[in-house]
Image (cartoon, rainbow, N blue to C red; front, side):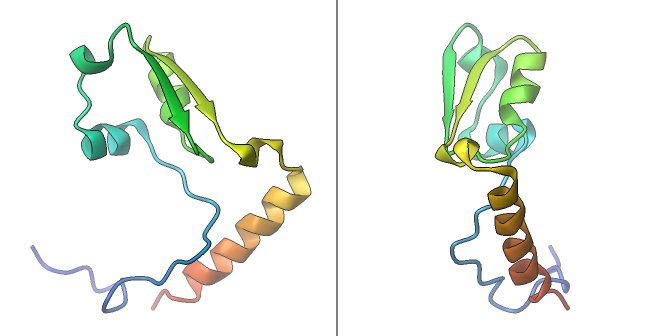
Length: 94
C-alpha cells in the first residue's frame, strides 16, 4: 500500500482536539462488531462527541445511547471548539 502523500510525514499532530466523530462502519472495524455481537444488546457510546454511530445503529434497529459531557455545551462553545480544531487540522494539510 502506498502512503497517502497528503498526510505529513509522521502523521498529524493533534493534541486537545475536541471535534471527533466516528461512523458505524468505523466503530465496527475498530471493535470488530458484527450484527450477532450487538443484536439485542444495550450499547452505551461514551465520549461520543459528534459521532454518527448512535444514529446509524438505532436507524437499523440496534439499541444505542450516546453520552458526552460535550452535549451540555452551548452552540457558541461548540462552534469555537470546532473552529479551533479545524485551524489545527487544516494548518497541517499540504
